[in-house]
Image 1 (cartoon, one colour):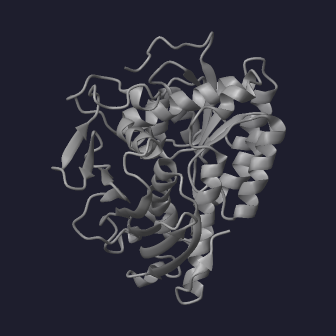
Image 2 (image 1 turned 90 degrees about the horizontal axis):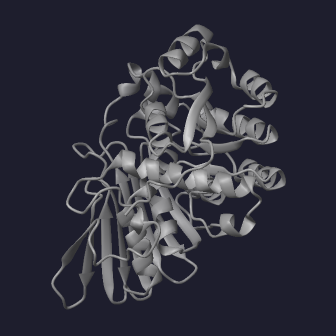
Length: 391
């Protein structure tokens, strides 16, 4: 079971950039960060409007004098305080991630950033080098990877329960943007605007989630890929609202990724199926407490979170917050990740590089590969779905 007694001498002093009034993702960050009393929200640049920022910040318990009109002011003034912030979460549109991450790292502040962390791998690699230089952690919010059954799947692959991996089928194909909703939805409008969203829409927005599940669970490395992108809502071009990717991995395994916002009638449809020489597993984020396990020649079975037959000696699997049979969900997954980020921040602050190296969390490398995926898919599409080398 989850260790609720883990404590620091003082909670990590934490701030947010973005995520203000009406932000669903901002609420997700705050709920996750404060679940285990390892973080305390003490400052924020929650809104571009200074008055709205102060109103919102004070309403969620932040002192008025620590509600800042912009992130530059916050980083400067907080760095001058003895009780200044130690970490910041970035929940702003994509085009701002690079500059805010860079400014935070230069101010010696740990970072948790929404993805994509940058528009280019060159920028992402620059942030990685800076984080190493400053001995600061740069984490990426791949929020679905905190589910215990994802960690169970990872451990099953690692222990050879499936045999050699042959096929990976990745899907994140919802239907919520099947028509031009952005006409009346500012929150969607920026996601389909290249200058703010970057070179992709659904590949960066949802496809990277499914791709990181593959990376995390299987450890496979992509050798080359081929991508087709479509803009079924024509006004979204050149950004895609549907994409199909074929992949070849270095091991000889193959994979497919379907990312879509126009899968009419579907909720998330975020699924990953991993086919090995002996067995297959399948996980679906709409039913996150179960993992399908199908061994050739045996009756299919469904593994349930919290049960004694799982690999409960693995820290990630042992993050169950309540016994089996009870539903755990999205907020528990996010809280598990924030718990891991806190441990990573502590290890870096103590310069415990061994502990940091042995702790899994979605790190800057996960962010780099998400950016690389988008870049390579655009490159392939621009060459009529040609196969392109991944690295």
